[in-house]
Image (cartoon, rainbow, N blue to C red; front, side):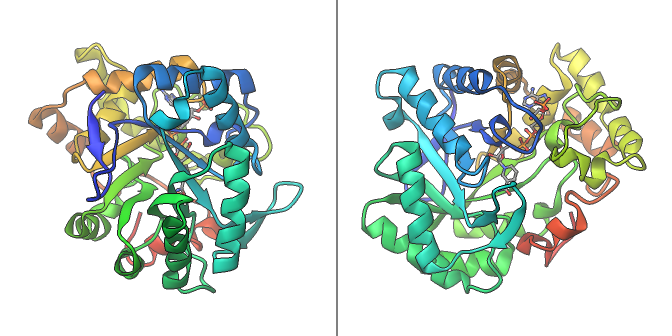
Length: 338
Ligand SMILES: NC(=O)c1ccc[n+]([C@@H]2O[C@H](COP(=O)([O-])OP(=O)(O)OC[C@H]3O[C@@H](n4cnc5c(N)ncnc54)[C@H](OP(=O)(O)O)[C@@H]3O)[C@@H](O)[C@H]2O)c1
């Protein structure tokens, strides 16, 4: 598979990474065997970037990845980059309880992640959100200490804005910023992406299918399980859903012409935005992963990109990308719109 650089320190990832969140959390019930089979299929296909968070299923997602790597055989751990987010706090019912990115918390979260993942180092470690009570310099400094100690190889960021990116990068080189980027979420284009490019920081883009909304598979009559993120997402709300689903007609048309699927066109669009951007696909079944990987064979030319731009210009989506309480945690939204 095509490789893409993450930052300027020689780190490289497969052009598409696998986000494992939905295998444990946030998109309703998930089947563990499907998750493991999806990770195995990803390794088989040459995916080398696996993304998780210690809070996805309160540790479940990390243990699922550990089990998948072990059962794949052949010491697969050494062939992948494990990208882990920390900092989000939860209670035993799964409720969200703020963030903790103090240096002592960094050390503690890391120790537990290493144990759950069954590894002696993480390839990329990142705070999931800016902790407003802790200067970013302190959080990144604490991770940098763990780099020196050999427990972490590279430092990433997640959902932060330009000022935080610059302050963090001044403490230690940042490999990549993980942030939502898709046809419906173009907020990074104005300031954040240019800043990353200036500093040599790559982007690992999540939500490239807008959580399934622009996958071509979304069924408006689908009943969502309690706790499914999409049940709280303004873009899936009854007043916005029809507008947002109508936007993807152009993807269907181009997909038909190219014998592809709308999901593949949406992922190919992100891939086409620059070789410094690695889409993280959130597949949780092997067939969805296979579909996503098909995006690598779709070439969008200038005419295709301009057709898509005309039909879905920046800001075309109805509704914000998170509910108001969650938007308030996004440092990345402080300086621009979604
Ligand atoms: N840093 C952050 O703040 C942050 C936030 C969110 C996610 N992430 C990371 O990014 C990863 C990807 O995010 P995401 O899952 O929200 O993004 P996504 O790829 O936009 O959405 C994934 C969902 O789309 C649906 N889907 C439909 N067709 C698909 C296909 N062909 N391939 C894959 N999925 C398809 C699936 O829902 P169904 O299975 O329900 O049909 C799947 O759960 C996560 O796993 C996580 O690692 C990071």
